[in-house]
Image (cartoon, rainbow, N blue to C red; front, top):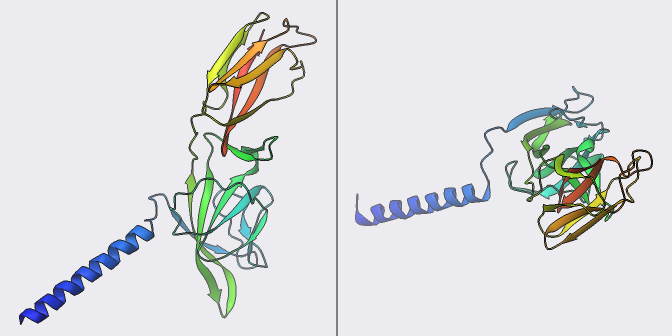
Length: 241
């Protein structure tokens, strides 16, 4: 073999290696827990996606009555690192090959006063990727779908139902360190919330008792404080006794 052939083969090998490496970088490997599903539409088997209520209807759209679906758009694969997409939630959306979808349990989402949705910490959602349509005798009968279960980052929020502490006398305060740019609200309570003053400054949330505990008229009992950081939320509890 002459020198020119050796050089040519070497250069071809380099090009091939470069192509493979670039492809691997652009298309993330499927996570180990990825499930591949032949998802048949409602007239050809009506396959549900995981434990969700999502299936493909007669119009070949994803549809659900108990979940929310978000079409994230084109993606590199089911393992793409994408934050929960909570701005275009719907119950029905077209099945589009190459698109990533996120599927949320309605009970894990809260619509905050600002109009921003957030998902509860420590709960999961499905991320799905449509590989291709399933065609039989020129009829679209479903889609090949890959999906995984994803837990969102808690963004520095405390655990769900974390107990901040108890308040017994007027002027007592409990506080909690939190990340920046949070949104919060105190849930209405049968015993009233007028005896609690909630403030947030310098990354600290403070709850102060401004009225003596009253088992009849309030404040009294356990109060739920909802706290959102970006696209996740938690509930923390404060007790008045």
